[in-house]
Image 1 (cartoon, rainbow, N blue to C red):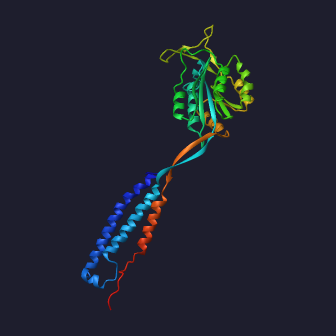
Image 2: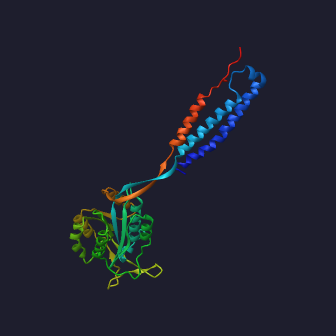
Image 3: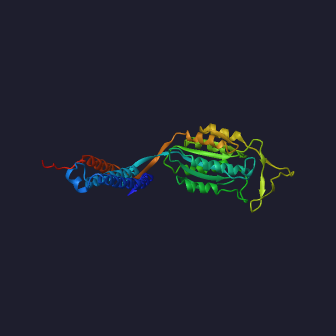
Length: 338
């Protein structure tokens, strides 16, 4: 047996002073009566309830209170199985992990702010069960997490993402979109969302070729631009992760990575999504609100096992004991001989 609200069981401790007060009150009344009349005389001429009746009534009241407390605690035993609809959204995150995402125009870096955004979205799911997938991409794309509702595992994969020192240069949206479509096709659900998180610097623009297939598969793309339009230099790090300089061009000048919004706006327009600019932590709330407004769909069925509430049993017995206590007369059930 278990309880749905076990905190109410603490009320049982309140019965200790209650029982002590009953005992003290009983002895006090008995002592006061003996000052006026002996027990022998009282039993012969008294018409009030005997000590036995008083004790029985006190026990009935105490037991009823205990049962009321158990009813409040919500006792449960037995299981009930039912099939319920699983409503939510299937969201595939595409996270840019190219060298430019290491720029520090956002604190501590573009990549860290983007990872924080993904984790916040997962932690702010409202009244639904969303399935999340995660792809990291730069010159090539890798599926880090297939669609899952295991949020702890998903967040672990996101938080462990780093920009590897041997990361292939460049940013390829086409590769990321292709892998995302291939993964989403494995789902029976026909409505999907892709969230593309990047600084937008895809120089090849090959992603234009994938737009017809995104429309065909009815995939809505939300694009999130990470960084500031003013840009920032790209750090160079050693094997221990310390900044040892900045990326330069052939003339020895620092290369600045600038947020390219035009491509991201084009993608969202073609797929019916929305574009958000993530320039700091405060922009995360706006993005979360935008996704929460997206209509949920039925993703499947799930067998739910619930424990059966049995509060009515202690409640019924408590009421029965109270009624019984009221039916017991306070007077002796015998007549004096005339």
